[in-house]
Length: 50
Image 1 (tube, rainbow, N blue to C red):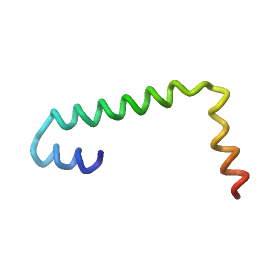
Image 2: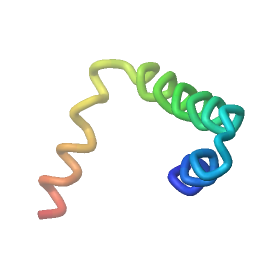
Image 3: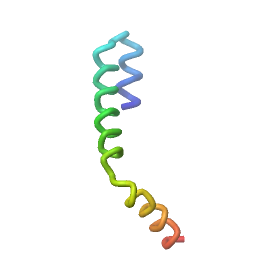
């Protein structure tokens, strides 16, 4: 995505910026869809690994 944004900046291409925004929104919707009770799980895994 960073490469795409760099290319968009060089080429002044708003369509590519919109594409990256769309991808980021899709990722955000996925994260927002994770139920609250599961938010702590990755922190627990990190603590166990340490």
